[in-house]
Length: 179
Image (cartoon, rainbow, N blue to C red):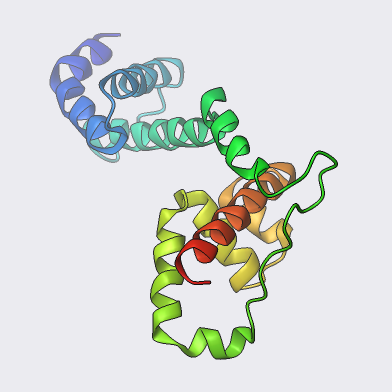
């Protein structure tokens, strides 16, 4: 227990700054540091093969990753309502396309055009990071769903929902900026 008090006074500020730089939220950074010290107390496996700071930072890195994964999974209800409301304009009351997607012509020739590539990149950049990665892995690189879910650490259901939103976002952006 003496070590914990020493570690807190010796490394607490450093660990907080480390977490704050990555999470960019003071409350989340505090929580991550607290969880780091709790993990160190519950599992005192420090074998002094490295410095205490290095060991605690390693624990903190895992806590930060857990926090980031949790925040990706938790989407505010207001975001869902707003996002779904934007998609409603594409469908009628029965769930069918109100307007069929516009003909995009020959995709091969469009991809060769630098202007299209610039707009495509602009539209991709507007997507949230995980949707962008999912869209690229599935629709551009044509990876299998199981492989994508494993890489992004998401469920298959979550992947389909995110892919749907990414495709709708891309469609809307491309229709507004290209077609």
